[in-house]
Image (tube, rainbow, N blue to C red; front, side, top):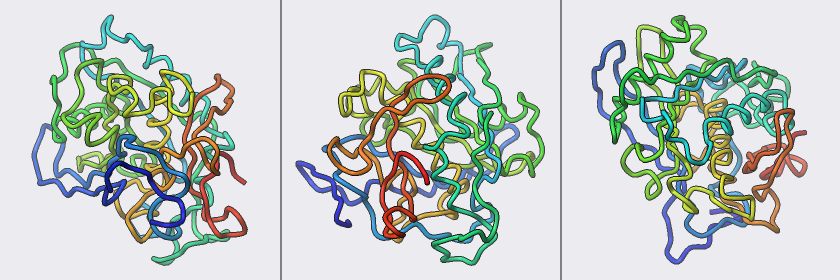
Length: 313
């Protein structure tokens, strides 16, 4: 760990763990990609985690140059089953996040440069931060979703979502990401104990689909952000959502985009920073309301020394 570190009652080896999943076949989908987890809050951080600056790993898609988000509220279990109002919060947050100074942090990272690049300095193609990033959402409620969906089921649902939204071009899907939001009480195994959310990919006839397994965050309580830094019972919804969104923008096909030497992504390095320290999670104001977010890692902060920031430049 760097100067910033986690304080635990025990030591965790890493905040972000990369898991290579086996190949599975589902209708319209193929092999599953790596998973990168957002770990639950166990203790707190006082600064950046991991080691060193983010560097480009040379992947086939290094960043989303014009990011577009589609949200799939999966399963009939969403009907009259949203006690925290998470759907409306997520929709409002992502409706306003495009063009914000918070999301602008991702624009310092790029693709089309040499592997190992740390500072793009105008070279390559930068990650985007246009307004209107959230394109649409869908309540896929004609039937129930699995009570404990597997990675293969989540990946297959991401492919279904791409088809529903008409995103069947492999080229378009290099800039698209899909949030698969599961309902209250119907989250994948390990939620709240091993992870708060995770992102991955699945191959398909529509190209490689980048998607996030986005559980019903308040089901995990304080482990996934409730009342973190005094930000309220629903703070974790947008803290976790923003974390996964920013990571997919800068590492769409884990782990081939922007990571540090430990394997930490832009969100992992700044997760769960407590009040009183640079980059502490806090409220930001967007055109659609005020929302809790964590900071994102900026290589450019403090004269290129690097650090966690809530806005850029």
